Image 1 (cartoon, one colour):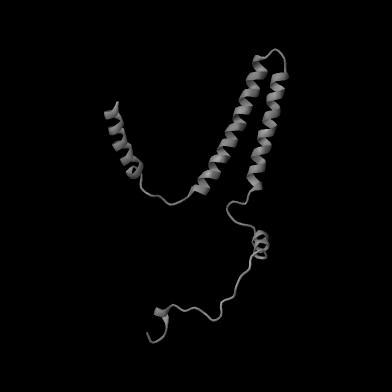
Image 2 (cartoon, one colour):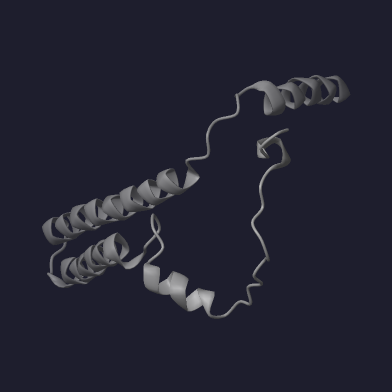
Length: 119
């Protein structure tokens, strides 16, 4: 048991660090797309379950309840699509936030020493 633990510790210790190279951070785009796909999958699942319940049940009540979940999931997809400004911050929010902070004005203009004329 200890030998297995030691070998796994060495192998996984290597894999965690060196298995993948560093990549550019595109987490925001991928995260939003994953959430959109999850909501679409939820709509597909609700459609499927509504049909199954309407087909297999002796009454129409289970299918009606599942159709209510379908309506809610479609509303959730529509809300998610337009409710969040995740790519660009609206200008109004920037201007509203600007009034809440104190900014000090620096006298003069900074010029990098290497860019000074005559150096």
